Image 1 (cartoon, helix red, strand yellow):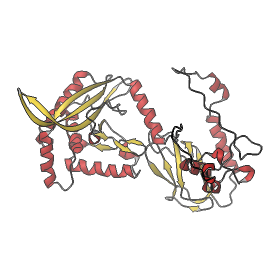
Image 2 (spheres, rainbow, N blue to C red):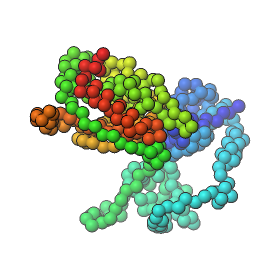
Image 3 (cartoon, helix red, strand yellow):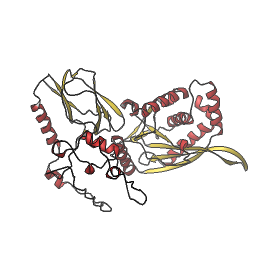
Image 4 (tube, one colour):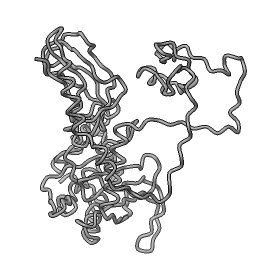
Length: 413
């Protein structure tokens, strides 16, 4: 009997997925372990593995399109098997789960601060004979979006004027075809890009964090001369290059051990004090931000932390991170120092109670005991959830962190 393949939940925050590419086509024989497709989630592009033996009888979503978790995306069964009944049943399930018109009508309407501007009306499509709606294949829409082509300017050659792939590939703008150049000076223009699954999740989770967790911020300046010298000495002997961020991860993990209230989570009617220390390291990627986790960071050497962070960085660039790589953080570090940022505040990364924003190291004049000397300093800002962490607790954590960084030999004992 045919079995439906549904969009799986590939991360704890995933609500929908985009089919980047199908690796199989209708009619292909598939076996357990075959990779059916590549799916873009809110965190990475991942492989969709098949668990059913048979023939791929149906593909229900085109490349580039998104569907919610649990939606039917394919059917696998015996060759020539009738699957109409199973598709109707799946469609009925989705319809039953969708809100009714009465539910939509009775839902409360949120008031906005200012009314949204009316969307400009699109010109009627020139390629439709009896239908004002624009007709184009999913692939044609995807190609047009990638090439910045306005579909309303394309003449469709498919059935009933439908725009197909070759129409996009052969499209020549009117100005170019007439040999005229169009100056862009003084001309208003814009580009709209579809929001990626990752960016949608970043927007939702950080908005929830910012507007539900009462943030407060503590900033401290730390002298960096000794740890800079220690890093240079360590790298003379280490088989892996230790970065300043690696040393900050290590220092923060030790400070968390001494201040467990910072290594905690707000759970509504209770507070969870984590006995383990898993430090999330924020990394910028093309579509947004990922936070892979260095687990049990307080028990790892600087070399171990360095290798792990470098491996995560490589995976993040290639969209190869797996759910196990980004789950379980109890504290997060966001470092923008390499971009010349001296000081900033970061939004807490749920379920953490705190996040440490790390600025760049800069040379300055240090005044101590009435004497001036040149030196290096770095500013860090701790964002705290006031429901869990009070000002004194956050300040004590920063004092310990400062002590560890200014006396780096303590990182090794």
